[in-house]
Length: 327
Image (tube, rainbow, N blue to C red; front, side, top):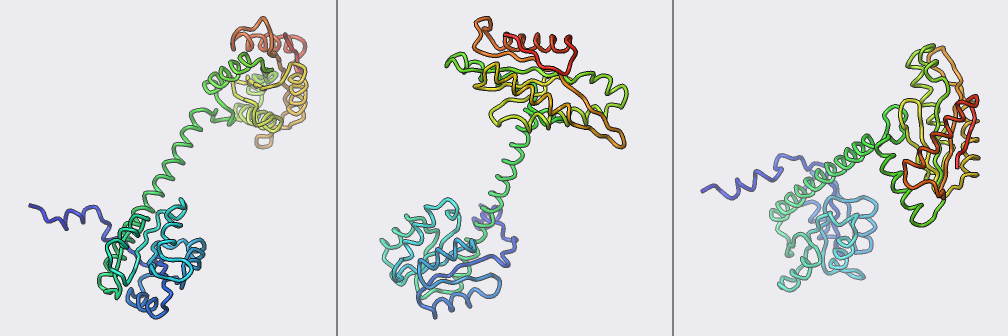
C-alpha cells in the first residue's frame, strides 16, 4: 500500500521556492509579533500590524501572500479581519492563519466558517508554525499559477475570437460576422420600427492601383481607407470588409437623409488621404450606395443590401467618387 505522504507529494510543489513571499503578521502584542517573525527566519518578506484596521490597510497596499492574525485584538478582532478579506473578491484568495490563546472548539469553528484557512494555539510552536506557513504558501503559489494560467487562457480566447470575426488585413469585421450582426440589427429595426441604413462602398479603380503600384500598395490603400472610415463612425455602427475592395457599413437608428450625409463626409475623408508604400504615394476615391429602413419594398437583409448595391452601381456609372441613394 503506497505511503500517503508520498502520494500527497505528487501534487504539492515542494521544490517551489518560497523565498521573498510576503507575510503579514497581525498581533497587538508586539513581543509575540516579533517572536513569530524571528521564528520564521529570513526566508520571507514581512509586514506587520498591531490591530485589524491597520492590517486591512497593509493588505490593500502590499497584497501579502499570507496573513497570520491574532484573534483577540482591540477595535477589530481577527474574526472581523477574516470576514472582511474573504468577502472581498480581490483578497479572498489570500490564505489566513488565525492565532488564539483560547482553545475552545467553538472558537475554532467560528474562525474556520468565516473563511480562515488554519488555526494555531498560543503559545505557538515554531516548528508547527513553520510547517503550516510553508503549506499555506505552497497553496498560494498554486493559486497564483492557476490565476496566471486562467488569465492567459482568457487572453488567448479573446484573441481567437477577434481573429474569427475580423479581417486580418484591415482590422474590420469580416463578412461572416457582418452577416450575423446585420441580421440582428435588421430584425431589431423591423420589430420595433427603428430606422436603419446600409452603405455599400467600393474603392474606385482599385485594380489599376494594384496593376500600377503593386499589391503592397493596394494593401496600404485598403488599410488606409478602413482607418478613415473607422475614425468617422460611431461605436454602434457596423463596419465590415465585404469582399475585395468592397466595404459595407450599417448605421443603426439612422434615416436615409442622415446616412447620405454620413456617406458624403466619409467619401470626402477618403479622397483627402494620401497612401504611401516606400517612396510611392497614391490617392484614391470611392463610390457609395445607400439604402434605408423603413421601406415597404424591403422584406429581409438581402433586400436592403440589394438596394444599397444598386445605388452603388448608379454611383459608379455616374462617374464614381459620389454617393447615390435608393429607396
